[in-house]
Image 1 (cartoon, chains in turn red, blue):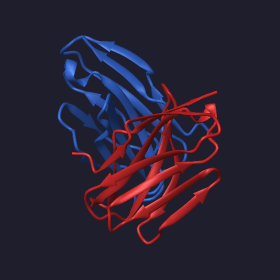
Image 2 (image 1 turned 60 degrees about the vertical axis):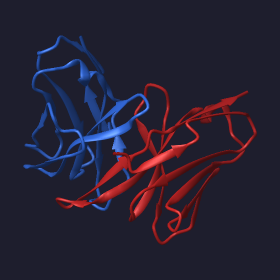
Image 3 (image 1 turned 90 degrees about the vertical axis):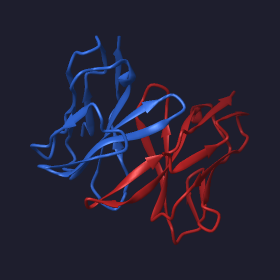
Image 4 (image 1 turned 180 degrees about the horizontal axis):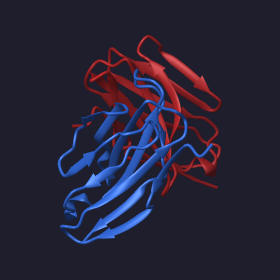
Length: 114
Length: 113
């Protein structure tokens, strides 16, 4: 079963616009991560936010975390065509065998049109 | 640095055949894992390892075997391929047990006929 679920499943915007993706999860977490995947490639880590943090920035990325609502959002400001990719949230499924397993959602497909 | 290297990139198998997907990392990461990615399903954890000689099952382990004889390598074996195992497989590694950043390979696309 998936821990995180992204919304929307797909998003189409024009260059220069902001893109917002949301992630909801079911159980308490230690941290939440966002990854990006270009078509046909592996996933690349974007940002990690810990459960005691509410907001984090990295360049044009802004991530918020609301543990009371069990949700997170990823905002990409001033989108570029090169931002076209799928974006996944991932949450830790809890310590098992000495390892916090990451569980991924189904992702949001972002298309940024020139 | 090469990071995480997966081979082969593409493979076609017939039902019942066996094969091994290779994964190697050069970052001296203790933790390695295998995921499969299917349309609309996100990534699902198959097996993972917390160090050489130690492996454990993830969400969808059936039909797959792993071993970890060295820190660098974490091969995934399909024992008797089935069409349901048609997927894209990703190997990932991390330096932290605390659900830190995962470094992914480029994936191996497997088709089982």
